[in-house]
Image 1 (cartoon, rainbow, N blue to C red):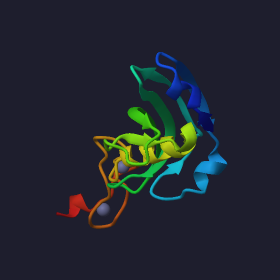
Image 2: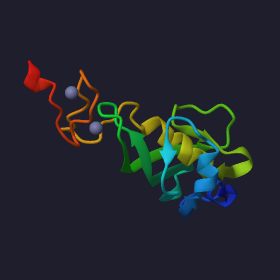
Image 3: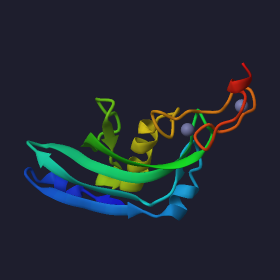
Length: 151
Ligand SMILES: [Zn+2]
Ligand SMILES: [Zn+2]
């Protein structure tokens, strides 16, 4: 989704509601650490306050992870809030500033790069995941083995 924000940049007080979805096909091409189960949905608002355009939005998605402890696959739903200052200057001032060439913003690209930073690199399926038996490797969430009895 490409947002044309020229009008917002030029009129103080003007704003635009943003709402969209990034389809799975587009997300799959990204690969990386995250495997997306649902489309990414985002919703927010860009507004020109006293000449400064800010963007606040929430992005949500469900991601399939591999548990770091028991190696089971599981899905987790995420929702994050993001804030940016949008600028038409090629030399953004702050880290969260987003350069909008010609007043246009690629919302999909922004939402994906924002989300990828937020995903944890190590995840467990549940806080009390029992993990794998260090001896036989069986998944102790699904059953018990006899290794501990032999001690
Ligand atoms: Zn686990
Ligand atoms: Zn065992």
